[in-house]
Amino acid sequence: MLAIQDDIRRYSIEGMLRSLDIQFAVQFITDVEDLSTFCNGQLIILSSDALGSVPDEIAEKLRIHNTNVLILVNSTGVVEQSWVDHANGFLGWEDLRPETLREAIVDVKAGRFHVSATLARRSVTAPEQAGDGTTSKRASMIALTAREEQVLRLIAEGLSNRQVARSLSISEHGVKRAVGIILAKLNCPNRTLAVVRAIELELLVM
Image (cartoon, rainbow, N blue to C red):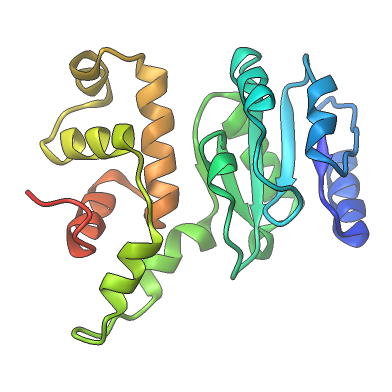
């Protein structure tokens, strides 16, 4: 299911999908309520500016049916928090090509959280000036849930996903999902850098 308002972008996505060796049937929606009929689908490809927040009943349906959500993000875009909580991957529009779209779909389908290269590099390449208030401003714009904070702290203590799952009495899949969301929120390509960045932003105090 495609939730992309811009017609040109939607047509380009449809064209890329047709060029891939992946079986699919595409449906286009313009309103978040249309998701209420999307019970047995495997993937929603969503532009970060396409829909508003997820209503509770639709959020529950996405969870029940384990629907995968891949979000296409503009270079300056902000993803609505309720969608971030359901995302299985983020792909920057600037990274979008048939091969990167295929890689994202394959990762999401396999249960791997996907973050495209440009999105992952942003935090690494963006210079930060000490003492100019940038760090505190960035930290105030990043909101981790209580669960994500728990997962991040245990990761910082060196626990594996399996150990984190046991410690929090949740599934390993749930931990992987939380880790993926943490990496996306902190714009970090790996767990180690995420911990370092969280400490820098004073989101995590060891």
